[in-house]
Length: 508
Image 1 (cartoon, helix red, strand yellow):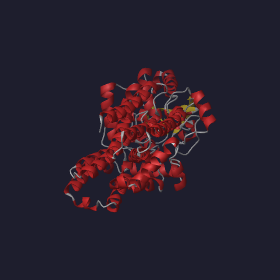
Image 2 (image 1 turned 180 degrees about the vertical axis):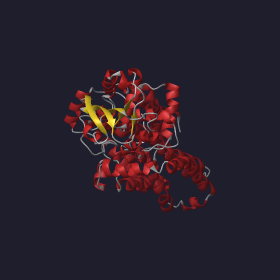
Image 3 (image 1 turned 60 degrees about the vertical axis):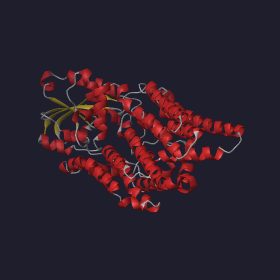
Image 4 (image 1 turned 90 degrees about the vertical axis):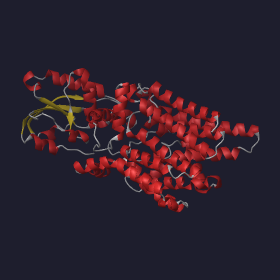
């Protein structure tokens, strides 16, 4: 690759990192970030709803940078920059010239879902990079014919599985892709199976954790499919790809898929296109959220940019400049139109007006009432105000009650927020029965005096003789189920506390 190509990729990556750095403090901490932060205080080989890698990375990040809003988002911002570089490098490996690398980098920079998922900490930011690295190593294996790279592939695959289980789609698609593209001989090589063994060894501690805890993740997946995730038809699943992956970028990735499958110069890399198709079938034919497929697009943007650059290369200089400018302007205009949906650049009131005007309100991919804001924004509002309200209620209790009072919140977002902000409000450790919080238990609490956050009072009366609603909390911009939510004081436990704890288990 040339120095100019590296400068193009590096410049695009820097723009992405700066965009996140300058805007990531405009809204608050995201629900999942609060849960992940809480999880760093319980480092383990597994969690109910995700594997351990993302928590280990965040633990290291918190140790190095702290846990302010900006600090929590350093790693995802860097992931966004690295993703851009990887897509640009893949384009160069495909034979793209300077404009091809520019187009690939610009595409990666402006994908709406990439910007959203690298704008806050979660396993999704790491997932995008790990899949891109897997694709890049495949490109290098094909290009250099170095079978020992399968060992590096196995290491990356194991890390990807320790980050998010959806990488199973990559594995399921890889074997048919190898068989259908003349790479079946790979399955007989020692390096391939050594890489596979390494991947299995890396994942083994997580599997052992699942066995010890009676496979909680399987229960979580079943419940999520049944009660949470919106079911899509296959055509609607395809339709849900267009806006998140960039309406203005649709020609790029569609041409990229075509190029990988049938264009002669990229014929050696057909298996990358088949892996995308396999991932599409894997996610699209079951109850998976549409954004799960976003991890498989990296080689499509690289290949599409390579094909477009190849088409215009023979044209006259003036025509080539005009067409190149038109392509770039189209992508930038599309990115500008969706910018308020990908970066928190507008105040909530203006954002609601804007999304209404353009008719683009992203789906959360989950059941239930929709908020005024997109879910990935709504889940950043109301947390500190909720904590302040709970603290007021807690500190207003008589000393005789407060000394033995246990605070329990309905979901992991509320619990994480109360533990994060509660440090400044003098709150004790807050517990929950939601997902991994259930396994972390209740410590020395006896449940005789319980302050509940966002539990239905009628449900509580099955467990407590006395239930009083002391206050409510909510935010105009938060998720609907965080609005007018009750804070209850419960006394007179009717059943053993251990049984009450088991009754409330929620893996969802």
